[in-house]
Length: 256
Image: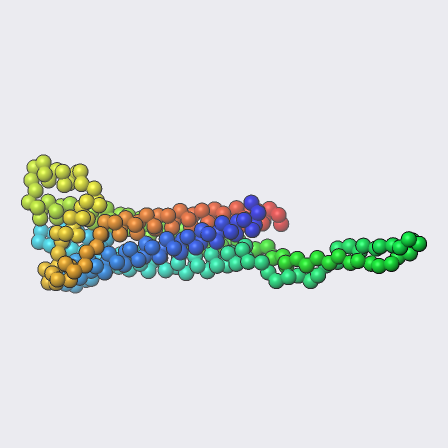
């Protein structure tokens, strides 16, 4: 693969990683802040996180807020580094440098009827300066593998927290609806997590601030699903960028 083409692909991947990270961050922050006051019923710790919520006999409590902190702040490195690397490779691959020094290509000598030289025409070419080959492939390999691990950890926490909250609210929903028998079986086995979160949006209220909940409605399931999809695509993009950097670094060492 040519270096210029590789840098163009990398610039698209890095910018895509930044956009996907921002999307996941915004979705999680919106849901987290919406439910924080409702779920934070703990006394000694802050348990206002939407992820890893758990059901008790009397209330439905949120997860440890540190999980939401990781879900939000864990994406900051991928956003910043993605923008920096995307801008760097995009500039190198898409924007030409200034013009080089004029280069004489050939001289065209014209002669008169007596065979004597009458005039000399000089052809001069001016080309853009060539960029030096990228020499920072190995540092890029280490950076992308670290961000791959961070993105994978973030995707796993988001996905697992989503399904754990879903399972816990299934139990809560059976209690709230007073379901028994086949009805409880339907709630437990047949309803998707999207439907479970829809029930939560309408049934789980803040008893201390009812008006705040009724004025603002949010689709919790859709927002969390969008956050999870974005973070998994973010991981795949970083993985692709890692392998591409490995290929280019190996090519450089083979040429040397």
